Image 1 (spheres, rainbow, N blue to C red):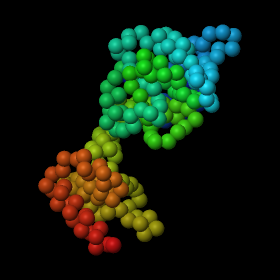
Image 2 (image 1 turned 45 degrees about the horizontal axis):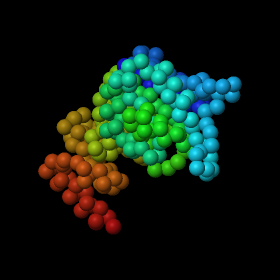
Image 3 (image 1 turned 135 degrees about the horizontal axis):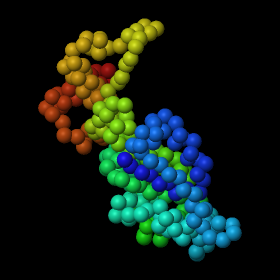
Length: 248
């Protein structure tokens, strides 16, 4: 089982998305546990202030260090078994490899930033890892936390109805996934490739590999540079590229 503890100033943004579909079923089955923590509950004073003006001046407000530190101290019972992650556009970009590595951990503490940013001492002293979901800016880290939870939780054994599904995903093998089809076999003249109806699994697997290579070549050729390809893969790619040149 993996446990997610999400630290946020806006817990209501997270509750509804986590109460449906695959994530809810995983929680109901005890495969995943998700706890949402309001950072304001760990702030002191009558008004539970969690932000302040930045030293040195400038626009915006900065999230305070103390409430986050208190929250982590209250939530984490064994610091060696917990990984504290700051969701920030300055972090390493989330990918399938990172998601898979996180899925093997027992507790992830996710800090959702807001406003102009978080006191740098949080990053320097409390955080184990910084993760971004892409090169763009959001109003806060809550949506990033949801993306990370979903991408990691689905890789926990037993969460998906078919554990093979995760292994076949785009990026799981380093290539984009092959096309999928289901019933009906024909609709408005749009048919399904005959090989998928043949029952010949050897031919089906070969077709899927070819289509995966083709789709990756067309849409994400950069991924091919990182792959260890077989001689057969290289032969297929040469055919695909030849077809592409003829089509121009």
